[in-house]
Length: 123
Image (cartoon, rainbow, N blue to C red; front, side):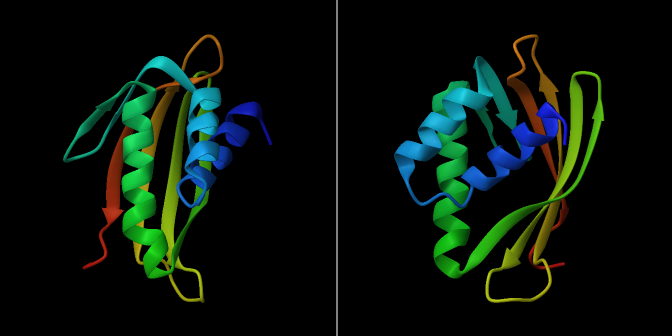
C-alpha cells in the first residue's frame, strides 16, 4: 500500500471515529491548512471545514448503524481517485456509494477533495 493509499484509508476511517478529538488530530495530520472539500451541496474550507463535513457524516450515518469503507483506490502522481461505500455494520450490501478525486500537495497532505455520489440511498 502506498503512502497515498494509507492517507485515504485513514481519512475514510475518521468518518466513523467516535472520538471527536481523534477526528480533529487525524484531519490536522492528513489535510493541508488551506484545504478545500466540495460535494454537490457544500464547499468546506480549511481543516475546520473538513472536521465539520466529517462530523456531519458521522452524526448522520453512524448512529443509524452504518459504517464506511474504501472500495477502490487509483493513484496517478499527486492525484487519487477513490470509491467509498456506506454499509450496514450488522451486514448487508452498501446503501450508498461515491467517488472522490483528491489532489495531494507537495507535503503529502490532502489539498483538494471533490466528491461525487454514484449511488444515493434511494437508488
